[in-house]
Image (cartoon, rainbow, N blue to C red; front, side):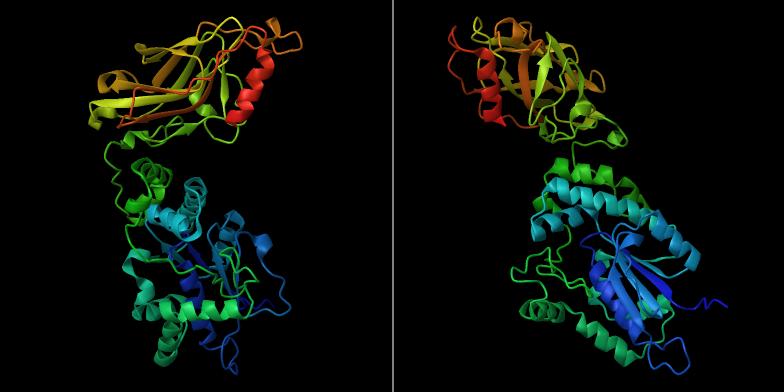
Length: 439
């Protein structure tokens, strides 16, 4: 007959930087202090580990009373296990913008890397919240600083733990005690000779630099408004599920939710294979290269959805970083920029240049999504004037980046001119060498 009482799986899930490691250790220690499954057991046996998939579960020679699993990304197979076993689920949550800011400040994550981790974990927490009646612990409530949290955990786990044992466990997880524990692990060589933040103790999951500032609202000092808006829009269901206020920064509209070509004012768009920006290139473009994209033919279009611009300032600024595809008989190319069919600027481009032009709000709001059109009439085929070339594309300009923001830079058109190409230069070779320099 199958003993359905052993082992009991306990899931400690949480957003990164939401004190999920504190919870993981508190739960494991509380269960160890509780009675074992058999009448003669002095205490329960516990196996604790981190896993983001079932494949990461260890092979166990003997089954313990409890499996305590820490995760940020419990996939469907893990969620199914907890549904079948009906094991306890505990979830730590935190304002997603603070979670992103903490990853960036504590571990030097880039914004994109931190956002990707938090976005994925937030979606997982939303799914886990549907499993039975999980215990939700909010970072902002400072549950990890309150001794009464131990009684709340024990009650949810169904664990009988003495008051003295609970107090001892709580004290062992204080900020000072954890800092000492991490230092001891460092001295013991658990983190290796370099002891970087990527190293961790296999059992407790503590690692160097684990303890952050604990500050609530730190995102306002770390993330510019467009990054804050991107986090909120990408985790909107998390905000709704866990009751966090969904107040977008000034100048951003909730109408951006779910839009495939969402653009957040102030966000630099970098074009190239390394960036997820091909969705904005809607007509007249070649496939993105390393850090740029070539315009094909005389007309190219970019489509951006800025949402409802009703609350925006009266004027914005559009900046385009361009590079001309020069040929022996042209020292510059005339480039016109239209926004929603309104001509805003016409400028000769003879070298690397940043074109900047003001965009009145009524032009921006004339239609959504916003269509930015670049006109560049002098397209040419490299193979027509470089005998060694087999490139038959109709090339005119190269686009490196785009940005719309509320503030202009120092001058309307910032230009760094390259020397005009001499008629006897090999234009194709020069073009590609210049691109390599930009990359």
